[in-house]
Amino acid sequence: MAPELVYADDAARFMIGRYVEGSTWEAADFAHPQRLRRLGLLLRTLHAITPPAVAPFDLGATLRAHSAHLFAALPAERKVLESLLLRAESALALCADFPREATIVHNDLYHANIVEGERVYLIDWEYAAVADPIFDVACVLAYYPAAEPYTQELLEAANLADVPRALLARARFVFMFLSFLWYRRRRLNGAVAAEDLEAERMLRQRLDE
Image (cartoon, rainbow, N blue to C red):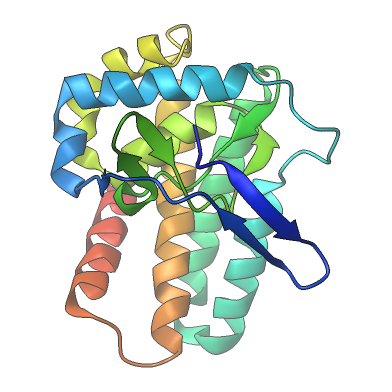
């Protein structure tokens, strides 16, 4: 599922992976059901691995930390952000009412993190965690609305076909909000690319729908 680990240095905080031939996915690939099925099968394999004994990922804490930073930096936006945070925390509580066994999740299935060569590989495991496997599917749907018509194919391939659609919609909202917070915080650091501004705008629009 990932390039072979060649060397890791915990003290210096770097690692080396084997180079793999291939090309990264494009955003348009998420509009193709065959590609999504391949990704779903890869997620099925990932989620079947026995997870390490680590604390489960606290997504709510991550949302609150991002929000607190923005509350301080952008007081004029606090009311709107608090409302979105409340909705996201409510969605997380609903997800917790339908518990599934925690698994390893990639947690950042952005198209540039998927390399297709002799097989499909996932790279950039910075946000990997032990959490509800539904988060990986929710991440895809949050990043790529074009994948939504093929949600069932993705769920079946990932062995998550029993997940209620209403629950998945709540989890997708959480990841849309997380992504929006990331873009909004990034803009605080200075000028950003036009495509990033458009991504932030579209996420904000989708959060209001």
